[in-house]
Picture 1 (cartoon, one colour):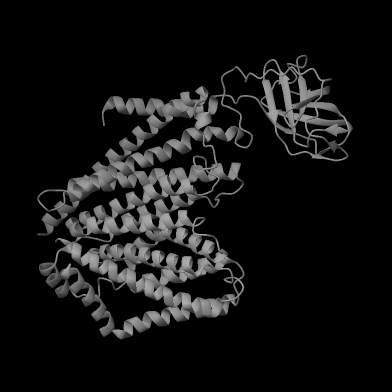
Picture 2 (picture 1 turned 135 degrees about the vertical axis):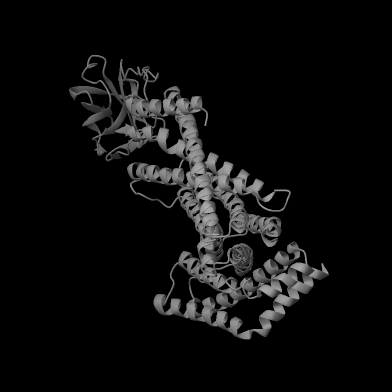
Length: 352
Length: 220
């Protein structure tokens, strides 16, 4: 591999390693302590994440929204630290519904939103009930500083986006390389398969398999944090596991066939089959089924957040760095295989 | 076409001549379903019904496919190679094996209805059940024939069929279990059409890939 590509690869990966962890999170609303509301005064605490409540005590405002149409101002009783504010809100007997939302507002953090299910008792619900007494002055603009967007469940683990996703991109790139060389192995005009192409296909698939394992591990850790289990029954996850098994089977097939010509032909055929299966499993089938993993029907993917400039500044270099790393590993893997084959040949020559 | 039909008839004749292997697979199906019956006694949910039915189906297919190529000796292979185009051979083998698995799974379905009939399948749509059974069986037959040919050519024996075959058929298995579950729950063809479509696509995919790639495998 070209020296400059190696330098770009290492630079991108160092950049990713540093900035995927170094970037701050944008402030966000974590939770409210309220369990159930009743008519009259309700006291609860609003918990922020990475927020500046104490610093901006003067400009602090907290609102309770009902049905996202009526707004009730809450009085700040005390601000205990940067992340906690104890507030109380007066609610009338009549509300439009029991869909409560919570907004905290100050000059540094902008508007923080919490949508938590809070129960209610003793209210009469009349649709379209408004509230005129609260002077509604929520600044709708987002946090202006540089930081990863705050997502309710993902929170800090959004940093994993820079590791998990590029790993799968790399695996795909390597499997495409492997697929192309498998096609070229078979389409040799002279009828005998080209062992050079076969070696390239195997080296590429082997490196892809390593990135597949890394992708599974990072994905599993992420799933534990956001969904609460190391593995969930999701078409994308199951598909990834099957792809892993198919490529392991590819290497079992390779290693169980001693004759080189025969091995190259058989494994090239199976590799083409495996690639078609991978496209079906990871690109097609998850789109037709329900699941938790982003990027399919009924689940709005990361596209919205990918557009966030702070994520993009790290995500694109991360993809570039990982793909180049994959290519680098593949080249090394190929060289090892060439040496192994030469050694085997020499061994044969000595014997005969 | 006559080459294809001759090869197909040859497969059928060979199978009928060796009745003991066919009887063996039949026994396998019966024993598996009966063991399921003894261990489950009663199936409460459509999902379990469908899953158990297809786990049996998959293992039956693996059993039937293991000898798909190894039953012909080396001499026969060479003889066939000199007579017919490899595409004809894979076509005949695939069609025959797809049919064989379908027949075996119909038998397995009959045993399932015998042992596990009752409330669960009261609202089942049998038209869909049979259609799914047919498409699932042909899918298994086509994919496993191809895998068996790879395993046979690698010369390592029958163990490889399972290693290569299981990951390959998982997408098919997931879809067919869902299809059968929906059919047992009595959903309409429209509600089940997506699963049906995926089944057809997977059938076509394994058939087309086998058809294109087999000639490369066959030439030595």
